Image (cartoon, rainbow, N blue to C red):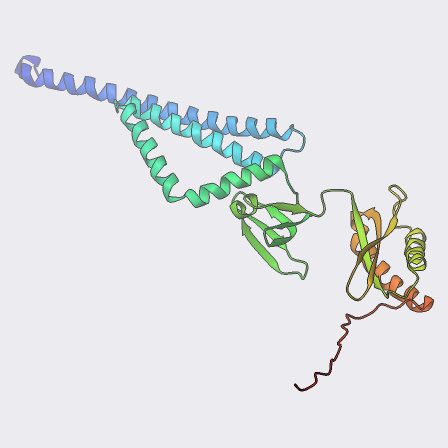
Length: 281
């Protein structure tokens, strides 16, 4: 067909459409390239972050994985903003919208975010670890797992317990397993007519005869208090944390048996009642 038969107006429009189409294809191709490269970089940054944190001694694996994911998601957000900028979208308004959305989500999920923050603090500061027996304002048991939202525990009677991180972190945490040694205190009440020195010697002999009692510091005995119905004599001895309960129960049993053999009484609470005769007026 002769070019002179084509209307110059249509020819200009076709040329303009071709130019716009080529530019659009170039933009789409560059956006796809940026997206692919960004996804690769995000994956590499996540992997490098996890590898670097794994070399930090004592760094928790759960927190390491969490920080790696945070780095990946932040990188992906930056990549998407860059891709949108390729199409002429105003990124300033997008960032403002993301900030407003983040604020709204934060207010809606403030309880959940508080649990995440508490979980991160516990993983970093490590007031306890898996296997420790703790008590935090009535939440007590052996730690089985420390998560970003909740901690799972097993109570002394084998019951499953799931507690929010924020409740544990905002409480006074008593860790019974943290230290290697604990002090056993055995208090026995004897009658006022019994021999105090003999009772204290029996308790001291029981401590020296048990291999679980540590020699440093030495066990000590004392008269702890003068109660209404008994004289309370006490034995204080140090032992390894793993031996605490076994030693405590065994010393209690042997002390009762030794006191019975020596004729030392363990009195029940007593009360003297005096009757006075009132003469009629």
